[in-house]
Amino acid sequence: RTFIKEEALLQELPALVDLRARKEAIQTQLNALQEALGRATEQQGEQQPAGTEE
View (cartoon, one colour):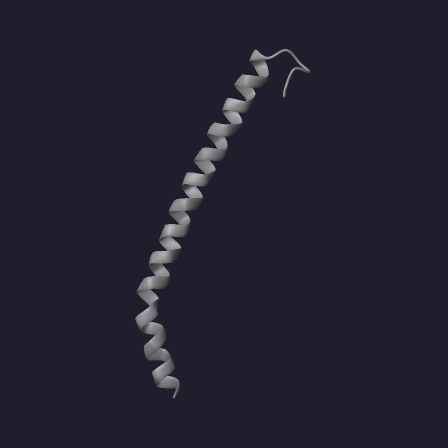
């Protein structure tokens, strides 16, 4: 029984590794987007006089 479980896990391992790699890639893209958004927000804040944000 244990052997069968291990076989099943070994078969799923590549998929799990792939998911983990994709998660890391998405996280990297998300971090880059957040940085870009932060910079854009700062620039917008500098351009607009205080108190006129909608």
